[in-house]
Structures are given as structure tokens and as C-alpha cells.
Amino acid sequence: MKAVRPEYYFSTVNPGAHIAGVDKPSPVQTIDVVVGVGAHVSDEFVYEFVKRSTAARKRHGCRPSELNAFQEKSSGKAQPNLPHHPGAIKFYKETGIWN
Image (tube, rainbow, N blue to C red; front, top):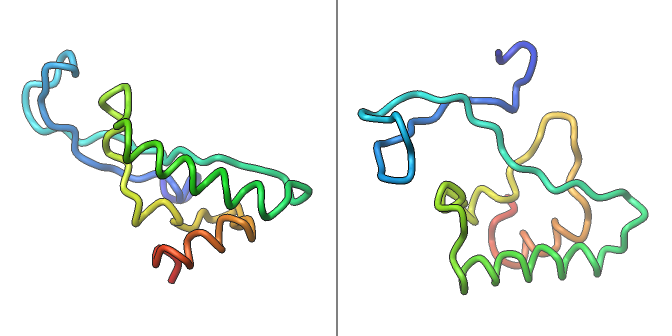
């Protein structure tokens, strides 16, 4: 899998009432959710989008519950073939996410 899609990885799903058929910790293929925008989209727009998305998630939680795995510190994670937008980088630097 890593040779074909290096951004895919395995993580563990634990049993829960909202996950049918999982009765013990189980390895699953994991794919990060990536929001892509073109280079023509303004830095200010992308900055505000990332900022507001992060704030809304903190305020309201996330539905469905599977999305509660969102981790702000890894939201700036590099993708092998997709560069970060300068507006997102600005937000990540301000919040200490960007290394």
C-alpha cells in the first residue's frame, strides 16, 4: 500500500455503539481528509476558511462521531503530492501547528 499511496496508513478502531461489527480493537486503512483549493484562491480566504473551520469544530463538536478523531496539531500534515496553500500555512504558523 505504501508504494502506491504513501499517504494511506493503518490506525486502530476501537469498539463503540456507533460502529457496527467491531467487537475488539481492529486495524483499519486510514485516509486523511484533505480540502484542496487552487493557487488562484486568495491567501486571506484560505486563512479564514481554516481558522473558522477549526473554531467551529471546537465550538460544536463533530458529527458523525467518527470525525471526532480530528486532531488540530496534525491538521497541517504534509501530503506527498499536494503543497500547502500560503493562507493555510499562515494559520498553521500562528497557531504553532506548522514546523
